[in-house]
Image (cartoon, rainbow, N blue to C red; front, side, top):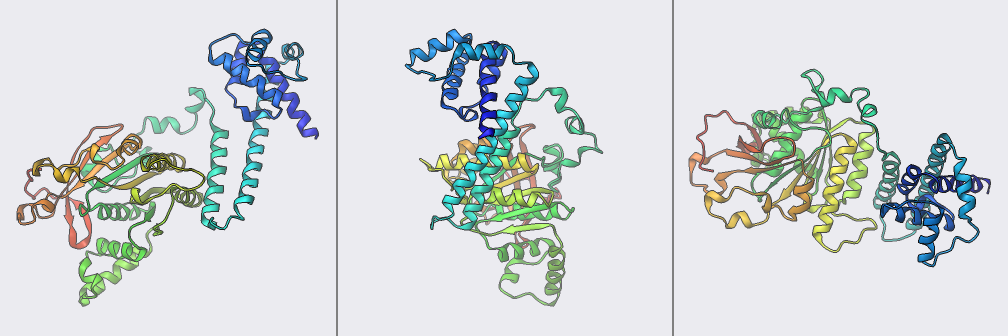
Length: 444
């Protein structure tokens, strides 16, 4: 009970101070109703916030008029007494009270999360993974809100942040090269922490091959990568990676038709792949909340540089949310992936399907556009980079001049130019490689 008395005194201290000083009133109005435990305190807080939102002056007279206009009474709380107490609250005490009230609110939210999890644990339709993801997500949100404060620029620029803002060749280590030289040139070095990249295309364009090619090139330099493959099994992904690393024919591997030399190459590649810092999850029913929780846990022990999601439209958003439409669900998914990239200071690469609109256009107009993205609004908005892998031979397989020609059309780059990158697609090895420029330019 003594804890509540202390909290009550702090609440009355900041409310009283708000009635006496405009600056303090604005500081109190920036809080939320959940910061106050007493109902009278909440009524007064709502009144102060309404007056501040309307640009009015907060004092005992204006708050009384606001409350009376809504037929609300404060019970035993006296506005004149609060004002008298507020005059004597020093700047140091006011800051201390704000911190104390905020700390108590965080404790209450943690306790509420614990009670909710105890209730959900007895519901038969909740799996352990869903419960853990929900608990982890809720606690992370509490932690994030606890850190959400305005900071002066001078404070932000302390430490190593200045070197990230004005990088040199020596300090620009946070940028991870994709391994595709022209793409790295176009993106000023490659992938950056906090970025959400989208690689979208029609079926058969090589989205998954692009993902595994990037995973191999990033892990080969010692950087940790997490691959969430909702469409293919772990075994299928490892087979593809072996083919990419060892230049082993994928169809011959799958059909067990490798000769002695190919078996030797595959075995050597398998040993190489086993040492790569690559984590794979092939759950087909994965929710974005579970993905978020798994990456956060892994990032506590491994400095992840890249998270790959294959592919975005197969993810779901579960938990307590109820969605009115798939577009709304995709918005939650892309928001969560972007937040994951920022919190874990890694790049998230999400593969995505395009709608059939590009298929209906004339041959030379089949290059994808941003509007071809399914549920495109939130995907395009949240993405830092949107690129379209495109293989013109898919539309003219009888034309030998198009063999192995591939492009990455960078249709959006938040902090840089858009453009076209030419690559080479080696289908038998399930990989994209840098173009040697001996290939003839296609009409696309």
